[in-house]
Length: 87
Image 1 (cartoon, rainbow, N blue to C red):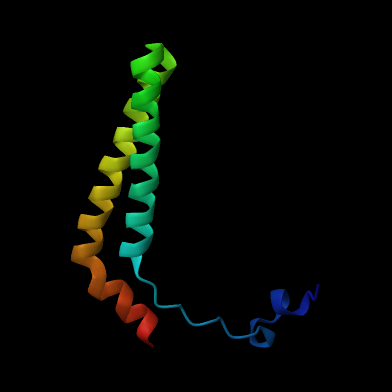
Image 2: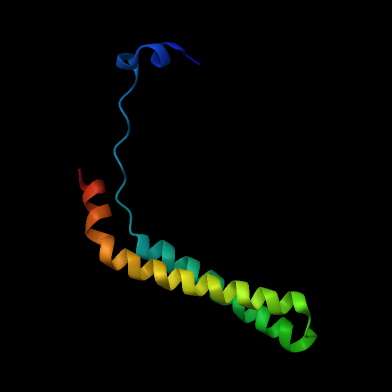
């Protein structure tokens, strides 16, 4: 590890450019994972009726809701983050 860039910032390597990504794919994959977990927790709750499976149903449903909220956010901010990756 070289210590020179700490003392002399001109010796630092240039920062890498941001990569252009499609956040919709990431958010949709995350929502699908939460939906699968929600289905599993509903099945477990319907067979066991335990408090832990009831809590997991709420956690998974909040994960799905947050995922949809992020999709809405992505829709309104798509131009901003794609402009950063286009440079």
